[in-house]
Length: 204
Image 1: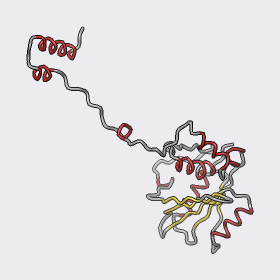
Image 2 (image 1 turned 90 degrees about the horizontal axis):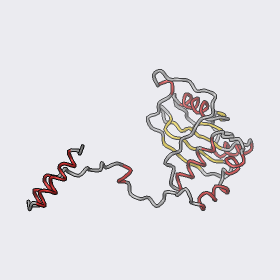
Image 3 (image 1 turned 135 degrees about the horizontal axis):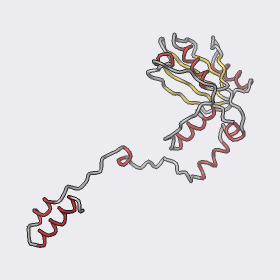
Image 4 (image 1 turned 180 degrees about the vertical axis):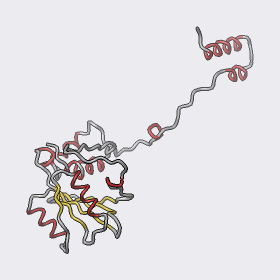
């Protein structure tokens, strides 16, 4: 049985054959279906997005600073410390990091310069340093340093919510964490995801 739209279309063709004005015929046709505007179909083409077949990009993975960890299976070792003046919520946030990042160790900053901490970490086979920067009330930034020769990244923190602040929260298990690095598709994003996130976690 023909649908209502098909009936209207055949009726319009018949009217056109009978010599009815085109405007009348078009007004009797169903309106075209509009395509909704979404972020995906309105996004401008980004030339910096890497293609899956970019041989130059993936060839560089074998020579970057963390190739020994990610390629050859060396276990990451992470040193976590703070700025010189810690906040009231700083220790709780560091405890969260220690429960998430495997093989992470906390060292109290004291009065040591960051240069001395980097020297100590290099001499004790640490692969990364995380410095938790805090204001008077809570942590507001993370400094992630790759060892021994960098790179270094600075991330701002805002609206920090600790696990204890979540109603009916669960507790972490002993499973290795799973990272979701979707949309790290530009060259810079690929490098940040690889060097500053993958290199912090155990994968082997």
